[in-house]
Length: 155
Image (tube, rainbow, N blue to C red; front, side, top):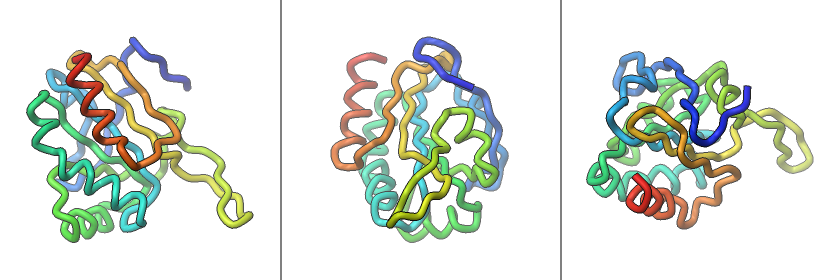
């Protein structure tokens, strides 16, 4: 499946860190920052999550909700949230179906070893559920501010 700017973002339902099943459509009426990251408690993912945490009120100020998605379990998400005081939902995509729908489940190479995993990516979805911006192969430094600025300027 391919996704495109200007069309409806792929709908999904995943278990969330609040103990509920969450659908993308639950957030219609708000801008959505849907960010995919490889793994809880790793250096880059922790930095990114804490950057979103530190800007959380600014995102709320532009009617945006932050949703983090990784293949980690809810139990791991809960520990990650508790350790770093994350004020937004983390979603457990353990079978990576949502990552595949958003085309972020990719072959990766680390120390010469090939494996499948999440390519760090962020999608901005408008109040009507349309995809308006995608960031692929995200570099963590400055990314959260860039996403926030996009929403301020365009939504």
